[in-house]
Image 1 (cartoon, rainbow, N blue to C red):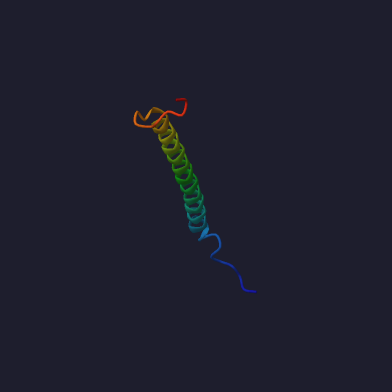
Image 2 (image 1 turned 90 degrees about the vertical axis):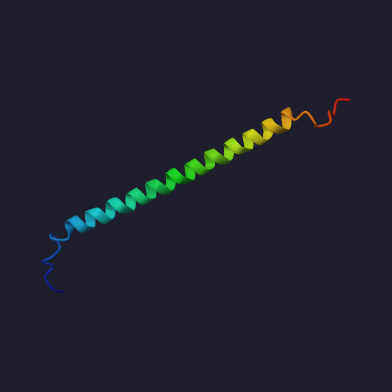
Length: 61
């Protein structure tokens, strides 16, 4: 009901908050992607290890 005389003066604060929020979302997406890549790489290494283990008994004998 009152006059919002400080709306313009707080524009910079709102802009900084918005940028911070976007940066946090971006960092969260980046972290999730890195975790997924690390998980996929670990799975690939595990599969390669299983295939190349010399002590594994062969099933074709």
